[in-house]
Amino acid sequence: MYGWLWRHLPGPAWTRVVLAALAALAVLTACFVWVFPAIAPLMPFNDTTVGAGMTTTDLTGRDR
Image 1 (cartoon, rainbow, N blue to C red):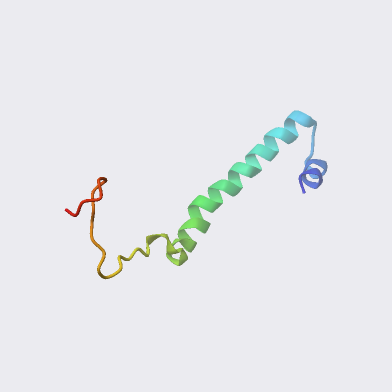
Image 2: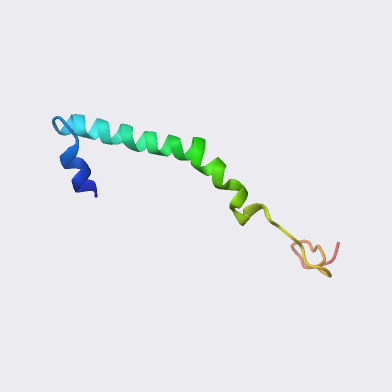
């Protein structure tokens, strides 16, 4: 994939490096602006539950 991209970018090597960096930055920006907010409600990271009968203990293991 990277070889294909490198061969299809125009210009000398330094121009290709700049264009590849800009393309990567554009993809990263699109992910943070549109993709990640769109899929955030579908992710289970905020679905926290505590089972019945569980107690809160401090680091020593004693009940509070």
